[in-house]
Image 1 (cartoon, rainbow, N blue to C red):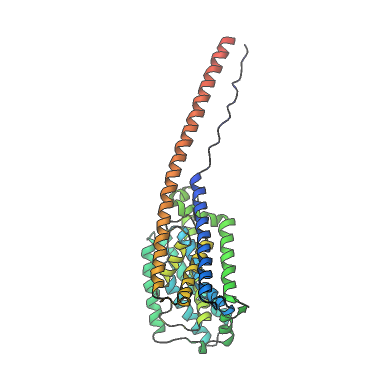
Image 2: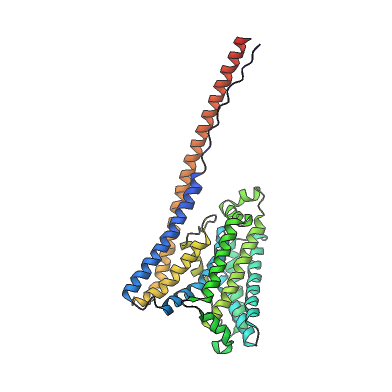
Length: 371
């Protein structure tokens, strides 16, 4: 009896999720769009005010963005995990005063910066523990710690104020110095930004933050340590808020109990405008930095063009609403694309299964005839 083996039918490859490619493409386009808007805004301002892009003008532009870029970088990691930290403004303020009080007492500048960062890490760790282990909504936790930290700051600082005269001359000079038009503080912010972006892209724990933000339950089932990653994101965010507080002190040389008030809203706006989706799982720290650069530049551009600065908040609000609207449109588009892709994949699998069944049936009939 001769037995013939049915020829193997090549299995059609299931196309990769076009939804993921669509998300990546859209948010890269948004980052490019923000960069284009920023450049156009700068060119128009330069045409209207020829002194805007002087060496000092460029330095001021970068210095104004430095603090926000640092805090937005940390906030981006938290938002990517589908959470938020509303206490960053209060953390920045109390860490700035702590560094200033230490320096006023004759302390070393490097130790002061480390002290500010450690204090920020402590507050970030507290937020992370409450959110990850306590399973309390991030909005509630960080809104609570915002007021707690602000209350501690007000009691500790009182009516006191740290001024540039109370600080070491070298520390203040460092805050305003740099290489030509590029400030030292901007170089520090750039180094932190690049290092964070590299971590998110090339380290497994960094990529897991995106998986966690996209689908927390699926990430948990896949073995990702969800609580540990959330805790790390909050701790990192707090540390950068502390560093930003020290940089704020070096930049302005003036800190009191109101430092950082309302700053958290500007940070969240910068992150969302920069393309980091508020529902988590998408975006980049580069986008957050571009959003920060755009928002801080508006503060410089409007006065240079003779426009009242009261429009700044209105423009920031408009940009935030537009960013959220874009996120919503993209989410609906991705859901539609994924649904069509799933239907197509199902049709391909059914077709392959029917073809295999038909060939198997034909092979059995052929074998019976030979027998």
